[in-house]
Length: 272
Image 1 (cartoon, rainbow, N blue to C red):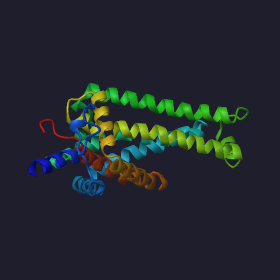
Image 2: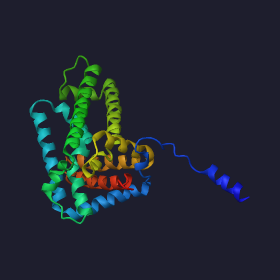
Image 3: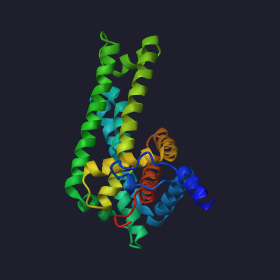
Image 4: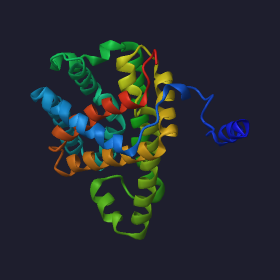
């Protein structure tokens, strides 16, 4: 009877469909409740670091204003929306210093703006490689927007007034839906391969492909929790963007610090 009970228990044991895949054994399963914990921990880090995190966020907001103004002066205001999309794609790289600040807080060290700005030195070659890949990705995204406009409106010059005039036509609505779907695909791929990659590369001597593989495995193992996390990132960042970028002074550090805690919960320690 005990033997039969044992067999039944064995038969009911869950089968791990991801077992055997690269990094499957290095990724933890997390709950949706933990996702909100990442935001709370991120806020605690923001509070603990004081002006340093806010100064870090303010620097990138200033760069955003400079780029936006430059595009307007150059008569390329139609590239502002793709630029904002590109900013979201490379945000994990921009947040590198925020991971450093969170690590300092975690280890009981006083955060330093200089250490945050030079966080790339922890793993320079591979972080530089990741940066170049992300920049190439953003260039492809921007070019895809221009090509899409040319395909939908072959007889229109690419200028902001033409762009706005077409937006309320049927073709304009179809174009908007197409570009939105394209943006979602680009953003989804960037999220899947980067959700834990940059914090991992700053924390350990791993290369960009290993970090991206571990990140993708984290999403595969936790689709519901990380789907929620992606939604929260869009929500918090969106609030920052609609406040004329000023809200990003808080939103970018909050998401950056929370991403460090997401990495800590999702990726096992080396000896674990």
